[in-house]
Amino acid sequence: MYNLASILEESVKQHPTKEAIVFGDMRLDYATVNIMANQVANVLQSKGIQPGDHVALTCPNLPYFPIIWMGILKAGAVMVPLSILLRPREIAYHLKDSDSKIYICFEGVPDMPMGPSGWEGYQQVEGCTEFITLPATPFGPTFIEGHPTLLDLMQEQPPSFDTIMRKPEDTCLIIYTSGTTGQPKGAELTHSNMVMNCTVAARLFTANPDDRTLIVLPLFHSFAMSILNITLLSHSTVVLLPRFDAGAVLDLFQKEKITTFAGVPTMYWEMINYDNSDGNIDMELIANTLRICSSGGAALPVEVLKNFEEKYNVCILEGYGLSETSPIATFNPMESERKVGSIGIPIWGVEMKIVDEDMNELPAGEEGEIVIRGHNVMKGYYKRPEASEECFRGGWFHSGDVGKIDEDGFFFIVDRVKDMIIRGGFNVYPREIEEVMMTHSDVSLVAVIGIPSDQHGEEIKAFIVPKEGSIPDTEEVKAWGKEQFAAYKYPRIIEVVSELPLGPTGKILKKELRAMDKAARENS
Image (tube, rainbow, N blue to C red):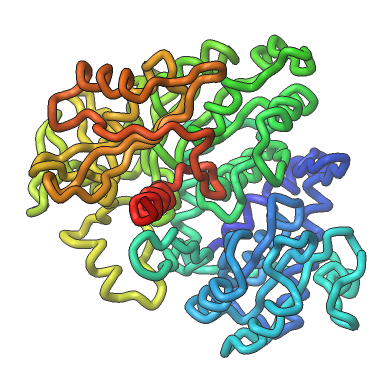
């Protein structure tokens, strides 16, 4: 019997006055965070929440989030974090699908989903009996007259709470997948999943109380939640930033003396290209303070990795995981030589292999699907027995990613199965094309997709963002690509764009690129 909230409670015992959360001028020590989490747990209990009940939360990267996360756990409940970009209709779906009893939502800015129209819609969700708002200004007014905010309710509660112990196999988190195929599904992660994953990852990163970690990845995402858990477990300090901006991130690197940072490839790309001509950012200070960076969420182009490391004098360790794997499954080891371009080796207690469609394990160098098993793998998709059975074929979790393994046991991502392009009967993996095109002198960033072709089934199209000051000649880039790739691989169609569509975590949204291309072809 234990509870993931123990990662906070143990830090309180050892370092009660140490900074736990920094947000702007707000600095909360571990004792204060624990008291506020206890008050949240008391609020939930007063509202009738029982162990195992589900509580949904929409909140940006604000101190509210980790406090509520720990409070929900202390109450023995299950948290359902929702993206801050969801609209009312989508939120209503998630509340109903997850059987959430309470919905806590930040209402502080106009583009957040908690508004009068949304409020009326949420009240129609069967089973969700309570809606609690978080004001932008602590103890400030709420747009719903006479409706108390969470902070109002916390003031009425005592500062102590006896954390409810749970079984290792009990669910503590339901995190929804992106829903690239069909409706989003909720991955059920257990207390054991989460405790083991952050414990192993903390050891892997050599996390320690002196670390100061900047989290700008959205906390509703599994990658960011794992980083938060690691900081709480290691008694270190987390600095929160609600939205990525290269200048703001670099400014916090120097002001807060950040030692560890986790990002996605586009974040590293933007920091490489940040214009520091005014000298406001002390690059030398950052280079001397940053201890380690990590990348996940999408494949990190080798050119981006090399350029960032050269500019900021810090090692980026690339890893791999999914919401369904808590999320970390592999990482490049720190204690031995990493392999650039590799996602590393399975973390302690996790097994991975490359298989064909019949679940036969493939030898080194051959491409197939990555399958995983271990303490990190979810118990299943909430209320989706058929989907759960399908993803656990043969007793292993099927990732949907194409990869390969080398002779030393290091894994490499080739691409997503769904992103694979079949041109004239040949399989083409966009990541391979993107990696090579990133080396072109005029190309700063690139995304490759497949588009319909009467002749070949699919044709290869590349969207490129040019380097500053460059005006790429698309015919020249196409000819250059023809020299780099086999005849069936090189992009026949190239479009120059000023930017690529990004998701809330900074991942390139190829679904939107396909929609953009489709609309352009239909209007031509």
